[in-house]
Image (cartoon, rainbow, N blue to C red; front, side, top):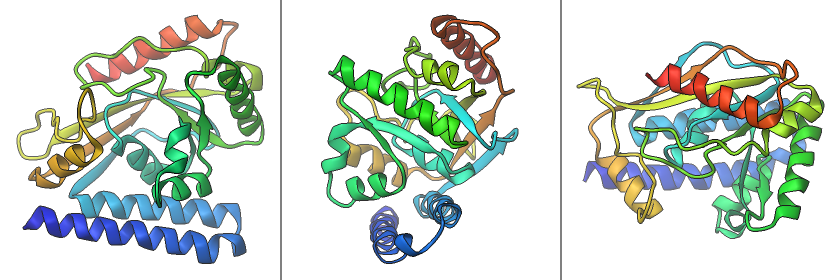
Length: 239
């Protein structure tokens, strides 16, 4: 019953976000929009029963590079600091969620198209040059959180082109009572979104920890070398 109640509250909160965007976003500044998104995301974590712990300070503009475990990763990062994300293009067609992500600055990519990947690299570079924060998950898909997958280097090229700093971010989900890693929010393999949501709602207490590492600059590295170095940084933070 408790999980069902939290699910109902989460759905109502989703609809509230839809209403705020529909009725208010056209009338307010980008800074006010970012504040709304950050507050809404923090509230959603609370509704879902998650606590947020932030270690280190997020950069104010640049590229966040993070490991990827769950659909909640986006929410947690937004709750710590507003940024733009990259997502597969079919999310844009999802009811309510597609509209929310589009209106909050999501950059959509057709993953099977090499040409579209090039377009998104250029679009991210433009946003970085404008002083935005953009977050990417260079593993390309979610993992269990036990091991890091290889990092794709495409989006690192955006930071090189924009001469932007990059900050590694390590994400963990922890059982608050035992201190052990929690796999309830995982979203991998044959998991459906509803299964992951339901496991998370039924978990007793979860803390999502975001550890922001030291910001880096290119230092003449090519994108593959820099991607590997960022992976090493995140691996060290997770160890």
